[in-house]
Image (cartoon, rainbow, N blue to C red; front, side, top):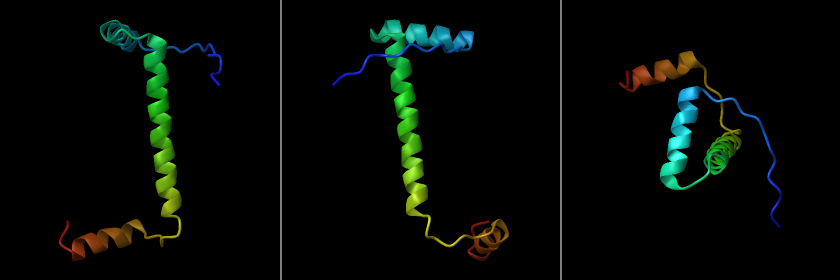
Length: 77
């Protein structure tokens, strides 16, 4: 079931707005469609990051100092 779109006011940098309008014209899509897709993509990336953090939650923590020592020991730095 499709839901009704909601209106939101978003303030964009003038140059970004111009680029977005040009892309909309060149791709025969609306500015709203482009913005919705960009927001969905950003949220999907966040969901992937959250999943990755959750998967690694059980791993032991290591301090920055210890990590630098390991890198140096292994010849990485």
